[in-house]
Image (cartoon, rainbow, N blue to C red; front, top):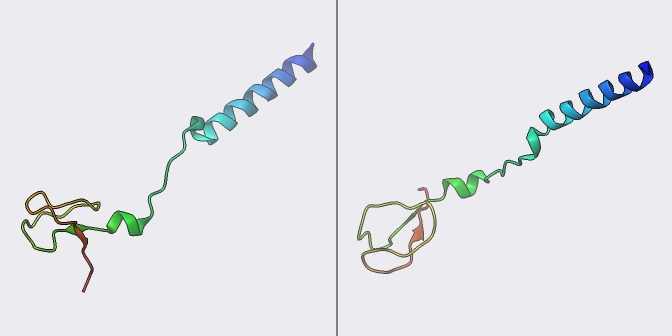
Length: 70
């Protein structure tokens, strides 16, 4: 009987440790830093607003362009 109790205790501790160390099954998705830093703006500068993703200008309808450093 002691072997069974010890075995259950070991399995329980192992299971709990595995679940905790794996974050409960949740996965975090890493966002590449290059994508996170990209900014877009209207090429006609209709508005000074800067966007995080490509879209169209709400004023003139042109496609937003990626802002380049320099």
